[in-house]
Image (cartoon, rainbow, N blue to C red; front, side, top):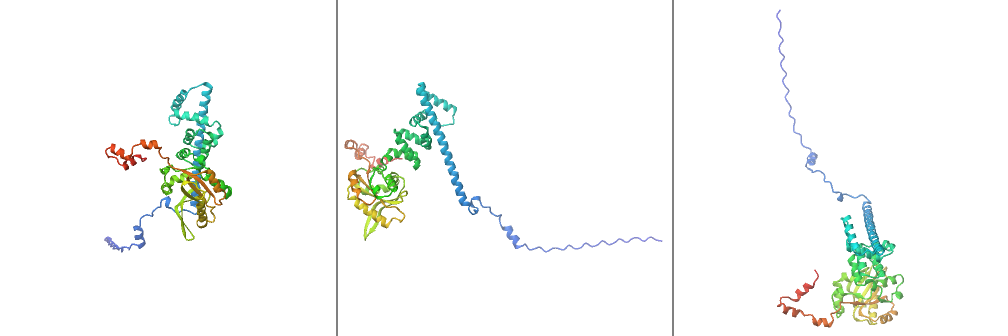
Length: 394
């Protein structure tokens, strides 16, 4: 028998590959692919939860209070240290007869031991000695002058010799937050010695304690030498200069005064009247009318000022404001005459003098060369404007 050969099986034809149709991109996918990543807002611009702003304000206030307490504590410790060093110097000099050279040696040794610490110069050690000598009682240092920076205390030590005056100016500097320069200016102008000295009828026309506060708000005399005007200046020239130098004038008036206007119009019965200067006192909560008189005080001046006070009370004053106060500033006055004139006046008025820059004595006026003489000496190369520029402060 013959063997049958197996026939090879035909290979299966490969199935044709189906080409898939390209899918259309989703409009959402296209939109999302074209968008940039979401922007992250900085913390300062993010939305605040309810109550956050009040909480933040409270935290800021507490932090500032803590900073102030820390500064005051450091200052008190420093002042206490300076006072103790000054006491030690005084005690050892008295007990052992040490001279001034020991302070120089002490300054050298302390600066060598504490090279990064300031305040141990010979001059400052001498001030510490004077500080301890001026304030022998430690409670005063802790409770009063210890609350002022060392620079303020140096001003009190060098500018005032009387301990009562030192305490008064130290208290005022603490109460009003005076800087060192402002303290210096007020001592130079004898501010506290002039405060409350104006002639007035406040005790008769204002209730307490407003009458006391009103009296303390006025001075006599007012120093207007910052205006640069001579004693012969007239009322309008002084008024114009006061507005030009209103910042200095407010400083001279004292704490609480706010400027309202100059030549303020008041219409009464169809007639127009103009107030020289109108202010508002923030502590007294009332308007203050200031009238300037270029000459000596006369009793009839009070009639015009009283009329202005009545008009301001009727037309300007708010129902919650106190009675309007008047201040008459004149070149000079007889205090007895002013007190008599104020006695029966029903409006609260004070009368005070103002002081302008003193004119040069006649002997100096004749000895000083004129601008024309200087021009001739210099060949006419220097003019009046140039000289004025030389005299201006930088």
